[in-house]
Length: 367
Image (cartoon, rainbow, N blue to C red; front, top):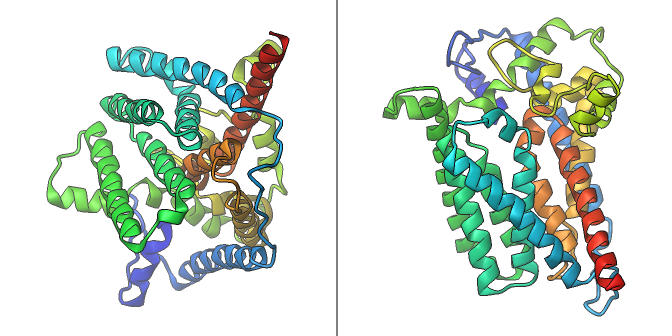
């Protein structure tokens, strides 16, 4: 979507990438070519990854296959996820503006905890679990929107995609059409919440402008700056950013206790490459910053290969696979906005959840 502004170059001399504020760009043919090349290489890398993944045979896990964990391990851990989710949703509903900064620091943990409950409902369906998970999602959306935050969108998207993944055998064209319409309405709701947060009048013209040009367009502005000023390769970090991402995965108190500075702050990972007044940078910009055009192609290739691996066939009641799938789905938007650090955070949460499941197993065995 950030590259949609390039389409206007087919019939006009002015390419509008971000018309809101003072960020109108009048791009020459050279920069249009460079932006188009980045887009083409990213798509080509993803396409090659997808085609190669088709050569790998699907492996269907037998329902009788023994597993290390049992349903009770997941359900016991689910009580902890439920308590954590209810506490912070209640806190935010009652004190929408109080200590918001502290709450935002663990926003992803709350979203991931709710996703764990939803995955339990999909894996071990019951009326109670579906009601509980739906209530959590709805309550979180209300609590999130009250503060002008639109991150509730990622939770709803993860729930919908997870539901389609779990019951894929029932998905028909009409269902996909309904989901597409719902996703569009969800996107509009996020835009309206964003406009309300910025005190923008909710007129039809403003809604149209913010719908077509929102933060998904703004994240291309650092890439425009990169392609303008650093095309010759003097910017290359040769993987330093990705190393910093891995080194930033530990909780912040860990760095403070050792007197260390966290390479990339999780509450705003965009700070590693920042334009004043704007937020993140497109994932292609992260790849270009580190390895140039080859990095853009490689990023698309590896990303699609990873997603295809997660999307491979599995047992319908495989909680761990559904849980992982939904965590990745919830991370995709921020992944594109800020780079892979959000995906890494979701994988770290997954590993920590595995530790919790193992603890629950030990508790059961010792009893």
